[in-house]
Amino acid sequence: VQLQASGGGMVQAGGSLRLSCTASTRTFSSYRMGWFRQAPGKEREFVAAIMESSANTYYSDSVKGRFTISRDNAKNTVYLQMNSLKPDDTAIYYCAVLNRSYRGSIYSWPVDYWGQGTLVTVSS
Image (cartoon, rainbow, N blue to C red; front, side, top):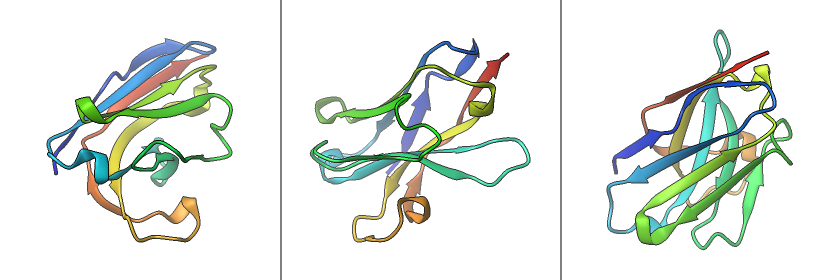
């Protein structure tokens, strides 16, 4: 599975961005999808996840209430709407296909496939 992310850029604090990630697969609707991010000098961290049918979504505490993950299975695309952005949200954002069998902490969710990153820079 190949994942192509887009939508990153530079925005002022309080602003919004929407990231998109399109998958090259005919079975996109069967995949659990997620977004991760890696800030300068820090480890990559979980941001959000969405299940196959969009019935369930999960968020890290740091973005809950500000970010929304969604998907359009007809377009093979997952989105991350980011509102009320803060300088601490500055990072490279990666989309990913999440392991389907995992049942543990969302912060440790194994990834089956990674996309390339897209840079988000939030200025103060």
